[in-house]
Image (cartoon, rainbow, N blue to C red):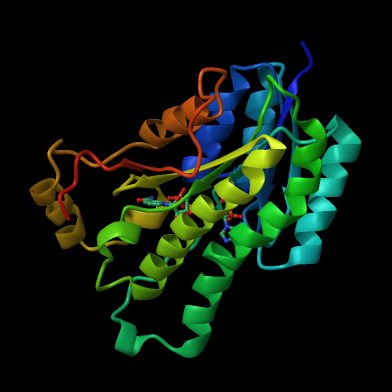
Length: 249
Ligand code: NDP
């Protein structure tokens, strides 16, 4: 059986890194991207290659569509057409909306929402070429639990993730005829660099409002991403799965 080609944006750290590790135990070539932290991305590549997984690392700013296209072309040349795209790259902005300036909002919107659209648009031609009847193409978008109830201290961020949910549903409808399945996961509070600087109150709030009284770990998310890309997932598309310990807003 030929190896699947998996492209993961922001695969050098946090949730993206764990998604790389998750796919490493399958028959895959992994292409991961970073934007600033080349060192962490290189460490992931080394770890994967030590386990005999072929892996390439690409510098990418998802805000730049031409860069997205160029990464896809390079991955295709290296490994062949792409089977799975995980749109994981994202940034947060934790500030009251009235205190945010235009540039800050714009950066969050163009990374988290435009970036997902850019990468999807750039990768779909490759996904179309790779699909067959029993092997659908897959896109998994990393949304957030804030897309559902919003978070008053993260307005731009919550809006982008609500946009990702809408985009996921519409893409699923558009791409189903090409045998490409599109789903999203919406994590709650996951322990990564992104949540490290949040105040103690954010952490205690999570414990108060979730059924499972703990924060999530990267594996809680990566295992569901893998499930959504697995051979048993053949009749589910356009869905947003919440991985938030049963958070009731
Ligand atoms: P991290 O901050 O640990 O990682 C973010 C990743 O995104 C990094 O690899 C970073 O690259 C990459 N990135 C940032 N900006 C860009 C850009 N413009 N172009 C390309 N890549 C970029 O965050 P997490 O692992 O926590 O977050 C991963 C995803 O999960 C995000 O979409 C986030 O919104 C979402 N999420 C996270 C939650 C959490 O509680 N942690 C909860 C809900 C959703 P580099 O390494 O080079 O800096």
